[in-house]
Length: 225
Figure (tube, rainbow, N blue to C red):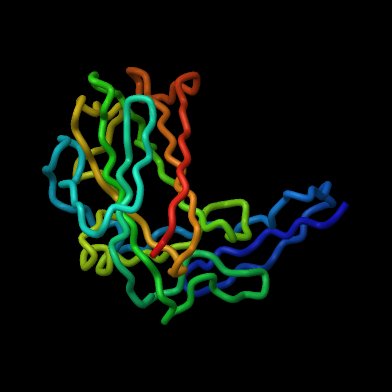
């Protein structure tokens, strides 16, 4: 038995106190709990112009070099390594010691996901769309990797921080057969780092609610160059 530590959220430059929670059973494969995410800053809320392959999505962008493709049942995700940049802000998470996981001046890498409906039929989606999670093999936390919220850097890298266009407010979002949308993320740059990309698709019903029985998750291993 051991104590499980809950890491901290960095909120507007303020650090919350660490919490210690009860005794949790230990496990040889158990990883430490990840930090709690903060809310996105205001400039990330600025919507991009409408258009692109799908009526409710921003225009598709394809910067960078393709490093892998995630192939699911009726969909695929082309993963591009776009480039690196210097973090101008801290990340969204901090360690129990109060240190940001991503500090100002750290090198981060941007990746871009181009998601295509290969099913031959329209797919209704919820606000979750097709989620992609990227994790280095040596990432020490249960939850996903940290990132910075910086709309200027996303624009510079030609990567959509969100797939949604202005006015996309009501699910289900009909994803036409053969069409694509794109979005991306950033995280700490680890040259030569082994990484796993996991894509999850859970379609929606006519009310925009998730149809969990049809959920699928596909993983693929790759390397950040």
